[in-house]
Length: 512
Image (cartoon, rainbow, N blue to C red; front, side):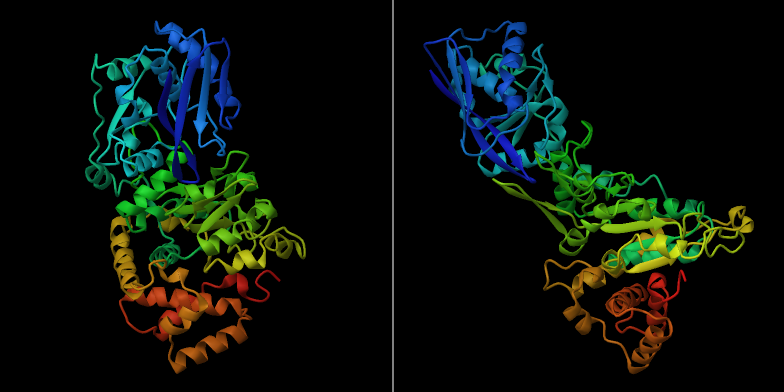
């Protein structure tokens, strides 16, 4: 008897429906065809043990399992349940009448229990698009799949529940998640708050500007000055995720297997902080079976690189293209997948190996040329993509011991949201542009017009401070953001002056 069941394969963050055909004929062998990997070939032993331990039987005839379309490589163990249900239906242990209405996925344990799968959300979105009545999958993944409306999602713990349901003996309980309630309930739940930070008002100001314009930022200062603490609080002042952004972010985390069973939706902006020993593939994504890397997991959020010069140069250089294009393309011989990677880069570093160059109290012990050599670990092209260079100085005792309450993240966020709303109106005709940092040079000339006095100031700054030509556009973009925060239509001379001071690393002789 020939029976068809339906599963799904995830490529990038999109899913493709896979038809699993099971045919039982005379003979004794078990075959899986249709470009399966080793994990799928091994499914025979998991399926056989699971069926036996749940009081079903594996047919003692020839079983041929075909996974169509046969020219796409199928990977992973999440087809176990799809194959097992097909075998049971083909051998008459399940009534096959309803099989074509459901998408069925799950990894089987030897006792018939189910293990979670990756990519439940994109699979559910594709199942709804193709008109399936329901999606049967492991209970651990049910909440993330249930945020897709107009699709019945059934979370199951064992294969017995699936068999009883398909035979009409026992109904399954549908998992229901109110997407909007789930989203708005935790939209602003951040553990860290700017009110915890004592002093550092100039650094908070630079982070506010970075958040308002989506600018990349680097913090340079001695150990213990608060660089990491400040960076960790940046997501708390970014505008809340929109529902579409939350869904896209959740899809990436679902594909990477990073969602907990209790999570339905990623409702706060991601903050990823990989260690400096991270490899190229772990940061950008890829591998034999392509997976999203840290830059994609930080999509719509913040990627924080602590101790930037300690990262391998090759690792930093592979970020250059994703920073510009806001996506990363992983190419293989037979396929190419795209992962979104629109993130804010925040980096921190010591000014020299000992950490005390330019320190107001402690003396730097690094020899001549050492500071310049340390800074040169960061290439010019990467530095070119960082808009704000911020020098962090240590907090003195009087500020640390002060009882005065600092401004809360919520208050700063309101100002940032107002600035972003101005930018949304400005870029209304450009669907790919969301903030000032994403403007190209041509648009900078149109949007960031400055007065004659501003031109003179900028010219003098570039000559006197030795600023490079690449700093010109960055200064104008940052000045535009500062003007948006101030609510003014034109870039004033004070906005330009503030933007100029954020180009420390472009100054000739900064580390000379």
